Image 1 (cartoon, rainbow, N blue to C red):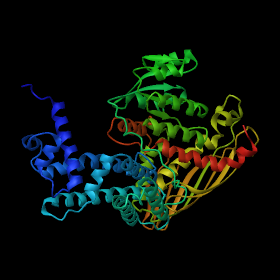
Image 2: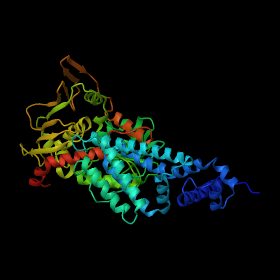
Image 3: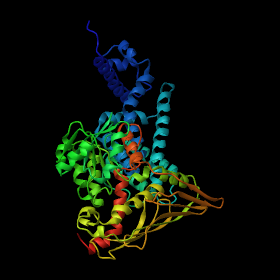
Image 4: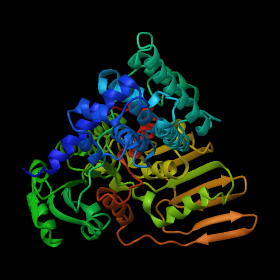
Length: 550
């Protein structure tokens, strides 16, 4: 007799489970026997026992093959790799309702799980129900805690209570659909009940009630080694990023591209990079390149990012992420649709100096933060008014030096204190030396509730660079660009933390995103976090852009 292959064995096991599902659904768990299951599947009782010791094992396997994928999806709603826990939680639940309404086998498994056969034989079912209840509730609570930390819950909302109410809502819908399927429509009533519960705890605008969300993207891709191709190899890549991308463990550079072929060839030769191109399409199509670094001016960020994503290659984009938030949204939509990660070079999120600031804030070193004051001043530079200086050309940069340099301040505050809200801004060109703004003021509220005021001037008397965060028990002072110590002042005295930057300033962030792409960590700067910064910039510059269209 021919020996069974692994595939044959698996097929037999699946056939037994399919038959058991049907028997459990028709007769209940208590009244079903292994002989009944074997007869239904067309196998002998011995064949059933070869795969399963008893009925409890059969039941556990049936539940596991449905329950495990759902719990894995629910687990992803609280990941630090995404900043949309409410959207993701809602997406998982609504698409589960849709699947249950359309998949008869899945629905039968749910009905088996929700039944309560009062017999000793089904103790395992009760234990599974209890374990599933606790696991789902725990995952919902973690997602809602993350939503609270991101400033997405209403003031005073308790994630633990919100999770219990949400879980009760879901169970109610499922029981209603099982008992009265004609009255309780899983798709329609499931979404309605879910949205009404979420609306009680979640701020307006965080999700759109009554709409079917996009499913969660596929689980993050894992690369054995990250092989980069650069689109753009100008000054930023010489010291800030290029050396780190080439030397971080698990990361190397295979090709670079620049429209000026001679400059691309020169860069590749000087940095011992195997290939160079004068065409972005050719670099993206390079079979060895599996990740793309976009180091061009902002006007082409979206274009190249979309091309890389379409090719299935993760993309690391210089800041700002794009010309405006609308372009960021297009990149994020493509990223979610294809399951391709996007990172943005807001590298201060990973620098040791600012990690120290975050640790002090999170540990309560200054108590509860109450206010933020930030300023960045630079004297006017004749170079900034040159037609060749793209950073003050709104058609290329999306704005002026506020967008180029101020974006670092905004993104770091988002990282340290949560997303910025209640944003009001005033922008002007006080010198009239170029089309972009040269003076910007802004007020806002942080995710921690502190009020903030910031000012950027690129036509000031002298340089100034300071952020001051004041709490009810102390104050932190530090600079965004200048290499100066972090100062902590409390009633106990003044403490200074002198933490220099690494030689390649982007190295810590690049190390984190390489680790994420290799499945071993996570990056603090993603497309989602960077898009929030672009949205704040849009709010601040809205009136100026209306009055000075480029």
